Structures are given as structure tokens and as C-alpha cells.
Image 1: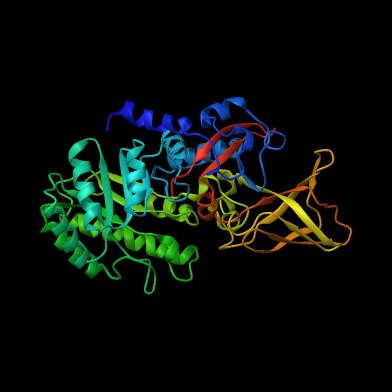
Image 2: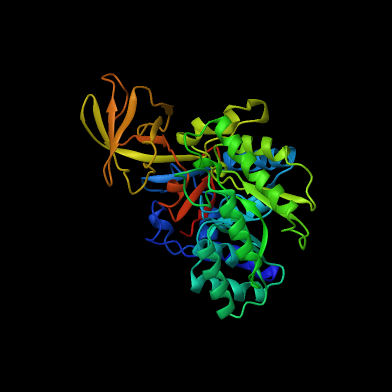
Length: 429
């Protein structure tokens, strides 16, 4: 795919017309393009936005992008952030500008989105056995010699299905695959034993349309995960790579891929990958963390490795959901107009953080205010008897789990610290 075409596709997002499809955008902006609306640099609070509205901090996103770029460089890691977190081509582009090797995806649709916006290296962290998707992939690899695609294989049956579909599609370039080692018995996908991994590698070697390029897995699924268990599994993964190399499985390669790394244990990945002995070929040590780009105020705030390595920096939560108080039926109860359709709730409820007064626009801490439940379109708020909160106020809430925050919003205002909306992030779930 030509670079100018990819740039054009990204720029075309600004040409989309603003209308009723996009939650919270100012009604008087209907008919403007996204680019025209962004150029107006409206204020999130006084520029006509309706509630609820999800805002993404421009400063925090930039901080997080730069922090993970320097972290990966410092530890000698290549970085393919997981695109399923945001499914936002604008953020993919920013991640690549900040040194990412490529973008990780989980399903064929996500790979097609990445390709449509010019991503030249895609790592699909799943076994791909969909014949229609493999036909598309074969055509895409043939059309673009610079496109590099890798995916998991975790079964001999999966290898057979891939082989058959790619042969039927007339594949002219072999698909690069990595054997996935499961994170333990009862974990998610992946071959459970090193013996099974060897059988899968043998099956790949017998296929003219597949090429084994390394090993991979996901340490976040280690049962009863702690630092010791996670590092023990990662050493199994690196030992598997070394054993495959010893057996001559990588003789025809320019580099060997060893990949792991979610958002909870990338410090352990960095430690163990640093221990990997020299192999017969250079090793691409590929980290795939994705939640860092927005971070959060819940689950990932608690589990981020930066809590264990504070000298390396700290991620900043970038999301804030603003909802309006629409009912104050008692001194200890209130309701806002944001619910399950607007806020991530699969891991934790939103966290009440600040209140913006409907009277004078002043902002104060949400002292004595808590979100205790969500209906489809209402947030249940409990307040201390003396808490300052009235109908019309805006309640700013932090969210837990970026992946299920992004996917509820098609167009997200990117907001500077002073409330100016500088851009709009388009998601494509």
C-alpha cells in the first residue's frame, strides 16, 4: 500500500460529517466536517457539547506515548501495541510515530482496519483459521511486498486449516507464524506442553505456505499470576525459542521473533527477555501492551508494572467521562445521565472525581460522592449528607478498563488541560 494513500485515508477521517451518529457532539455543529469542528477549538464545557461526553486528555495521551517509547528503548524491546484497545487509526499513527514496530490485533476485522490505514506490520495474537480472512491475507501479502504479517499457531489442526485455505487461495508468499505456548494448564489459548509445540512446528515446516519465525504467548493468563509464576512461564517461553533454534528450525530466517507482554507484567517480560542467550539469528523481542495509551483510573492503575518500578516513570489516566446530575431525590442520593451505554463497567464502576458547578463553572473535588451502580442510561450516585451536588452540575468520572471505554464511543473529543477540544479520535470497532 502506498504511503501517500495511507496518509490520505487517515486525513479522510477529518472529512467525515458530524451528525446524530456521534454522541455528545454539539447539535449546532451538524453538517460540519470533523476537521472543521476541530478547527473551531470549542471548549468542552461551554462549546455546546451535550452530556454525557467522554473526553480524552491530550496531554496524558502524549505523556503515555512518550513513556512507553522510552521504556521499550531502554530495555531493548520492539513494541507492537495492541490495537484492539482503541481501534483508533489516529492513535495507531501516533504509536508508530513514537517508535512502535507495528500494531497487534486480535481478529481479522482489526487487521483490515490497520491495513486500511497503512500499518505495514501487523501481529495477530490469535490463531487465524477463517478461510475468508486467509484469502484476504494472501491477496494483501501479494499486493504489498512491504507488508509483514505474523500470527499465532497453537494446534496441528489449526496449521492444517491454514495450509488448506492458503493453498486454495493461491498464496504466493508464506504466512509467518509463531507457536503459541499456553500460560499454563487451564489458561487461555496456546499449546500446553513443549512437546505439543514441537509437533505444531513440525506441521508448519511441512507446509509451503507457512513459515515458522518464532514463539509467543501471553503471560497475563498465568494462573494465580505473581512475579515468580509469570517469570517462570516466560523462561519456559524463552527456553522454547532456544530449543527450536538448537534444532535448526530458524535456519532460513533473518531474525527470530520472541513475543509476550500485556499491560500487567511487561516489567517481567523485560527482565526475562534480557536473559535470553544469544541465538543463531538476531532476536526481535516484541512487547504487545496496549492499555497504556489511555491508562485508566481503576484496574490498570492498580496493576501497572510502573507501580513496581516507579523510577521508570508513571502512566497517566487519560479518560474522563462527564455526566450531568439530572435528579437529586434525597440528601444522600443523586442520579446522573450516564450509564452502561456510556461507561466501562466490566471491571470496576466509574470513580467520581470532580464536580463542575452549573452555577459558575467552578470545579471542585467530588468529596463525599460515589458511583454505586449503573443502569442503561443512569448512574446511581450516593452522597454524604453534606456533599455539595445539585441538579445541573457536571460530574467528572474516571473509568476502569480502556478497552471497554473506547468501544462505547465512535468519536471522542481530545481535550487540552484548559478544556479546549483540539481533535476528535475516531474509533472503528
